[in-house]
Each structure stands twice: as structure tokens, then as C-alpha cells.
Length: 46
Image (cartoon, rainbow, N blue to C red; front, side, top):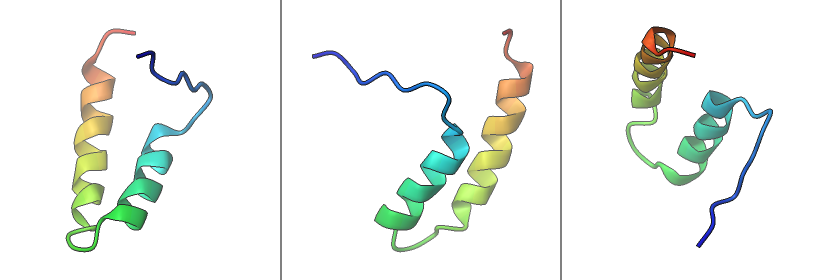
């Protein structure tokens, strides 16, 4: 099964919408996740 390819998407904004829609508790944890993901992305080679 092939995945859906999406381009030109702000992935953190998209993930935030998913969290708000599907997460009842601990939504604030996503703010920590965003920091971790942003830092990790900065360390990866392009």
C-alpha cells in the first residue's frame, strides 16, 4: 500500500491540528514535542 505524498505542508502545524482533534488529555505535551523535533531537525543533515 502506497502512502500519500504531501508537499509544502507545515508539519508541526498539521500535527498540532491532529493533537487538538484527537487528544483529550496532555495536549500541552505537544509544545515540548515541537521543541524536541525542531532541535532534532536542526541537527540533521539536509
